[in-house]
Image 1 (cartoon, rainbow, N blue to C red):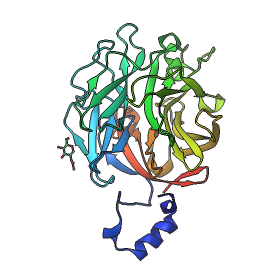
Image 2: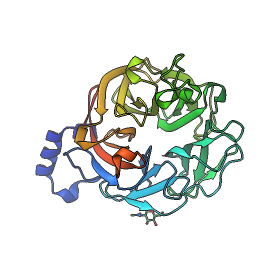
Image 3: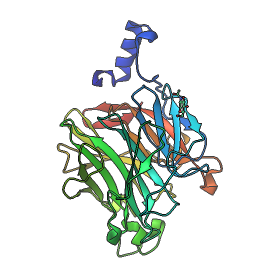
Length: 328
Ligand SMILES: *[C@@H]1O[C@H](CO)[C@@H](O)[C@H](O)[C@H]1NC(C)=O
């Protein structure tokens, strides 16, 4: 599918075949579009076994985990369902953040999410939950995948299937939750690390294999933090997408780093893939790019933007060219 990544290639395909021959999502090439006009932060997505696209968002609109679906990736329907009808014994029934879902080899769906640790609220652990269908109901495990409460907790999980068939989960150590004040509680010295970790998991997607390894951390270019990691492999390059700065800051943006091997070293590209002002967006972040490297969802403030009480889901098409990513 990589030969389809340039707009010129798409133009050629469009001329050569009737649209009915094309499979997969409808392509738009004029930048991101508003996909869910409602509060739906930290979105992730996958294409389910039946070809329907499902997106998952942080708690909102009366649900612990939000779900939307789409037949074409362009037009989305926010579903009035509860994807996580019960919570795990380790967590409180509040603050379910940044879900991410993978389709396991046995046909089951595994959701990774951040839950509020009952033993150390408001710090979070990464939990797992399993369902037979993409929209759920997801049944949570009573064993969290990662807690790291001594370092601030574990949040923002995202699954990754390597070309070798090995599964991983990337997540963020929520160091700023034990910071010393300022933007996102981490602009006052001593600044607390907010590392991005890579955890190998077994084929079941939920059993850790060995210890997590650090693959990135914030630098002075990231203000208080990096967060919302998402890993894909295109060609021989691992692309680690992440958000930089505090989500309430106009400098919040989507960045990416590249590496020749899954454990790194990851080199920040220095590029802001999408930032405030681009396409009329405000504080875009929390992005997920599909493993296919062609589609992305993310959030940005919407509604009464100044009030910062609503983050809508935007969708975009992505172009991978060597070690460079652009939005179509
Ligand atoms: C979207 O998900 C809902 C809930 O699972 C389902 O009823 C509906 O059929 C789905 N839409 C499509 C197009 O599959």
